Structures are given as structure tokens and as C-alpha cells.
Length: 113
Image 1 (cartoon, helix red, strand yellow):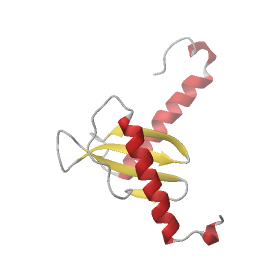
Image 2: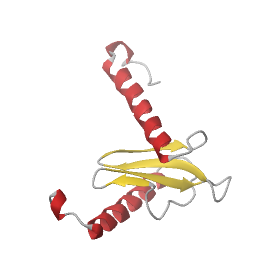
Image 3: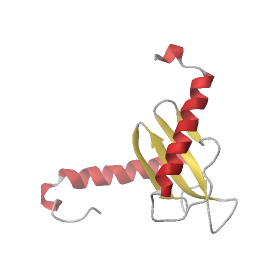
Image 4: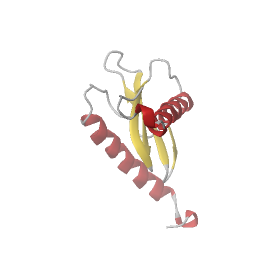
């Protein structure tokens, strides 16, 4: 499918599939999460989506952010991340740190930061 062929129905299908992927991912994690939003907070289909996940401790608030799409699915505590933009920046920083660690041969016998 080319960008010219992509339409609103494709967006809806892609986002619904990503929501289900987020829900399945969170179910495998060792933490409790609230409800996944019905729609991503931000997305660029078919590449990336950012999802708000409800807080268990503070119902009605975002407790977690999840990134999902054509990249590793990951989550972050929303404590100091108030916007989807801040969440994306936190994921990028985390992944950059892990990439640096992976490049350093002297650290391979240790644990990641």
C-alpha cells in the first residue's frame, strides 16, 4: 500500500490493531496498569503511536505512556512526563542510552544502565 492509497479507514484499522498490541504488551508486564485510551494521543500511521494509559492510583489521570508501531513497544511512567511529546523524548533518551551501552564492548558482561 502506498501513501496515496492510505485513507481514514486504514488509520482506524491501524490504530485499533496498535491498541490491541498495547493491551497485550501491558498484560505481559509485571505491573498493574489502568485502561488504554480508545485512541492514541499522537500517531503517524503506519509507523508510530503514543498511548496514554490510566493510573491505578489516580483514576482519571495518565499513569503511563506506551509507544507502539514499527519499533519496539515500550512503556514509561508518566510521573514527570505530562505530554506525548515529553514521553517520546523520554523513550528516545532511554533507547539512546541503551544503544550506547550496547556499543561498548567492555560493558557486555554487566547489566544495562
